[in-house]
Length: 560
Image 1 (cartoon, rainbow, N blue to C red):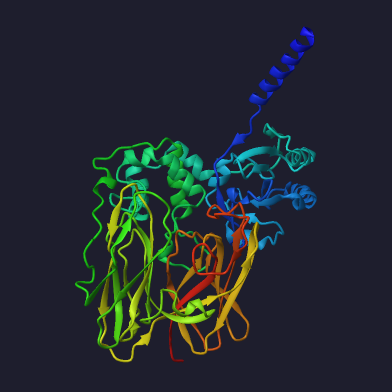
Image 2: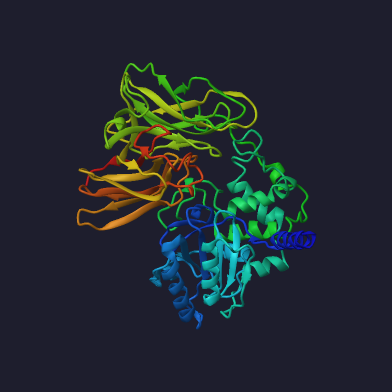
């Protein structure tokens, strides 16, 4: 009996040791758009057992055979909770990728940063990833080894990363090699990107969780900066750069991303400089940029606690106007910019709440003043000849979103209104287009679509997506009376925490009879990071614990 006990102990020790030594390679989360503008993020595939990627390049002679083998694996396993994607590791660009007409989604690795991170060296290389843990099950070819690895993943028995040799075409990482030899310079290359795109929020007294005000601060936070750039959490308000354009979207070019990531990977070197550029950034203008407003509307004081996640708040400002007023420009001044995340202001009737007729109507034109976004001067001058009408007896209704920062505070935000006495102004409105639905539980992609036909010619000046915690994506389109559709803007990665009004750089003129369309989807699954409970069936509603799908088109009518 002692001998049997001794052998059992040896077996147990051996098993524990082998289990401890077994390990799956770990990688950071990432996000990319594909050739059709759809958003893909590793951590948003948690409703799948694995995510499979293959580096694709049509120029490689071996690619046709490799793709055929890969598609055979996809046909065998895709119905078993495994997602198959291709990735453009060679950075060929959207137009080239779209011309291939592939049946599998092809991720656009703009700047090759994700492929670099995964150390993909050859086309045809296959990665099998665990979306829940951001770990690597398999690296190799689309072969019998891949088939065995996927079978083990489904069986739950793969505890160590499997590696097999690949025989594809080598991938050239020219920018990475250039930056490896000569890392980007902090003062002349890195700091200007940070100043232009980040400092507006990440400053002392700003809404960002830390200040980007020196080299030492950027270096200390560099792992976090790298992470949020690769998974597209930052810059916020991620949109598809190939569909329309709005400066409110805070774009970063692939060259800017390469500069930041490669500088961080090089150890965030200080370089040589006399004065740190981020220490000499001028203070934001806290005054009235357009001069003293004709009227200052002050929101009721809001108490913001030190900690916690806060729901939207609603505030109403009664106006003393004895006649109709036309507004030609506005400016917000936050009471405490460190906690005010964003807000929206509408003109409503004296007995209406913030939602006004949207509570009962799917399609309605409303008087939208403007939104507030952190990190900007929040000054809006409306197109000449247009204005927002505030009828006598109406009031302002605000929806405010606050974030906590560890200190209790008070906020009393001001909205400066600039009047116009011009004759014959066209009224600036927003067309709300929405749907009604019941959202099933554990549904990662619940499609939605709504539309409206304009009876008069109009100029579309901006768009905004509005969903709650389960919002996933929204695209804005215009369809002519002849049925020809044009995509004008796309929000492929909706974030409930960021709901800006995107003012289009180039307004779009539409003829009478044109239809505006919003199409997209909701995500009520475990893969949605903002989803409070994927097991709940969600009813339509305007409150945060309900769900809605509404697109807004800012416009004014024109004569043809």
